[in-house]
Length: 446
Image (cartoon, rainbow, N blue to C red; front, side, top):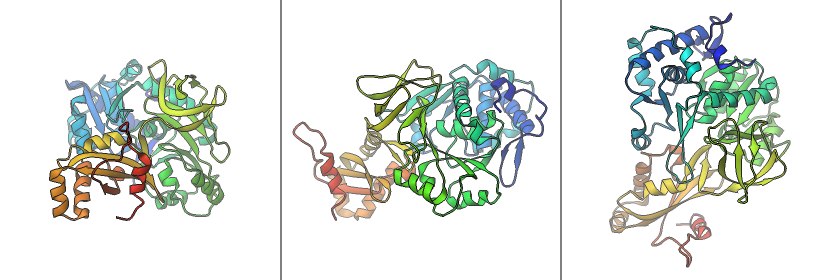
């Protein structure tokens, strides 16, 4: 079942009974959901501010606020996180910050006045949803979307996977603040008349507890959670799993299939493009484009697509590919220095720029490393003040100082796990960093 945007916000026979969000302790009916959107939308409409940043942890309240902003003719800005540094960097982009505390404290101020839900239909083509990605330069890149573009993604997903997900409830281990979570975890279930679990799945134990209900479920996940599913049980009839955020390592995909009979549908895409392609790695290594996505050949062999999911005529990514035909390709690696750490995207040059602002540092270089798991290492050249501190404090204290500095801008999972201190960065005659020498620094005892 697929509802149009108009039908979703219209009254119908099951308007009062349908559960759209639920948790272990509560449910939210469509009637209450629509009423809250209407009430909050009226309050937003009464405000002079136009740009509202959304940083709401609870998925149902986030969705209510998002639709209310659209109905009020406002711009919804989805912040990538709530780190102080991020808020400071993007503060010029918004007028009011909407978080869980703001919604709770302002709720008594708004009541339903007039029905403004028809405005959602009128504003569905407006580029009033703003997301941010790190971009190729490392600086937050503004990406504009409309509800109509996001709905086109939902239609493509429902057309391909609708018979698999059926009417099963949706659970998620990913954030709704990013495009993947917004489309797969929130919009797709709602527009296909499926209910959404409010509680985020952080640990395998939470997932296995949900499975005790003996009801098939849809899991929107990333490789981080899937790599931790350590058991021997046939889950093929109980979980329909989608994974994105970073590539699922081949040995993890194989273990999931061998131990759990689980074959995740991997999704390739970006904030700029939306969904691009999918694969089941145990069945096929190559990626297959969604029907609505057109591969565009270019001489640089960079993945370039045309699709009804973004306003630009075409978008070129930073991924090198080997194209096999008009719909399938193999990923060969990234052309820039953006990496994924536990499913979170990080621009290494941006981390370097922030770290270089510390008064003890002359220059630095960040690198992605891997042992049992992927992590960030940083090579640092200290200035005179830094050398004085280095001789006065322990290495542990120095490392902690730099981590505290970076924590104002980056989440804990993205902070460097290993530091090396050198007199100068290793470069060749052309002044280019010698990456192999950098790597060797981290596998030599101090």
